[in-house]
Amino acid sequence: MKPIPRRVAARPSVKDWSPTEVLSYEEAAALLWPSGKPLSASSLRTAQKAGLLDTILVARKRLTTLATIEAMLETARQKARE
Image (cartoon, rainbow, N blue to C red; front, top):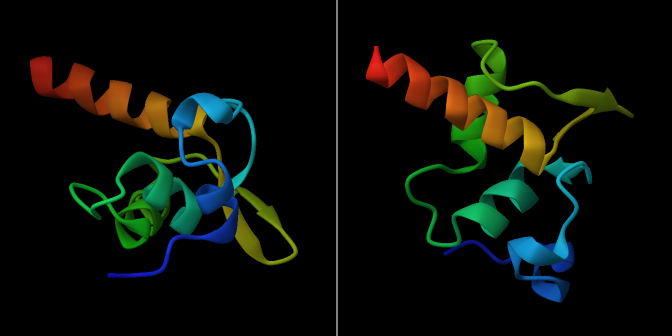
C-alpha cells in the first residue's frame, strides 16, 4: 500500500478540507478513497486527459479540488441515468 501523503495524514477527514483547496492527484485519491478503490491518482490523471476533470497547472504540477472532483462525479451520474 502506498504511503499516505503528509497533508492528508495531518487532516484525514474530508470535512477538514475546503472544497476549493488545491490537491495533488495523490492527495485527492488518498483523501477520498483511502483504500485505492474505486479511483486512484492514476484514474484522476486519466479523467483529466479525457477532459472529464478540470485541473490547474502550477509549476508543471497538475492540481485539482474536491469541488471539481464532485462535479466530475455528478456529470458521470447524470450520464448514467440517461
